[in-house]
Image 1 (cartoon, rainbow, N blue to C red):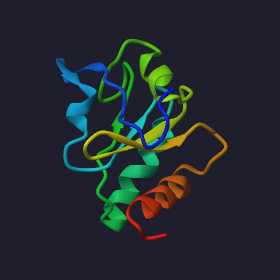
Image 2 (image 1 turned 90 degrees about the vertical axis):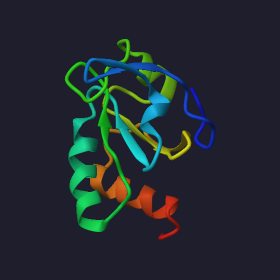
Image 3 (image 1 turned 135 degrees about the vertical axis):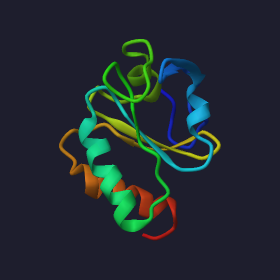
Image 4 (image 1 turned 60 degrees about the vertical axis):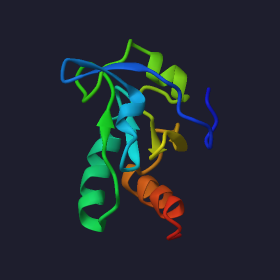
Amino acid sequence: MTPVGARAPHLSLLRHGTPISIHDLFVDNRVPLAASGGQRWRDAAIPLAARSDLPLSVVTMGPDGDAIATEGVFEDSYGVPTDGAVIVRPGGVLAWRATSSDQDAEEAIEAAMGRLLGRG
């Protein structure tokens, strides 16, 4: 498992049917990546970003998500359960990890982004 503060692991993905590197996602914004069962993280991050002008581009991994990796590879590489999430900074540095499904998703992402942006 890659520690927070280290470079995000490389993965090959399919996005809209096109092969890409996961690092192609980390260009301009901080990117919450929700694991295949982590739709609640996406559902929390999108309105939070719109409401508060947080620089987020949300991506859900998995067959029903925005990008597809080999099953289990994202979760294993990023150290999250299937209902977890991470935030990756521009440049590809792993900035935050959610491993508990007990957390309030919106509150957790808002707190993490506040710390990452020096607001809290």
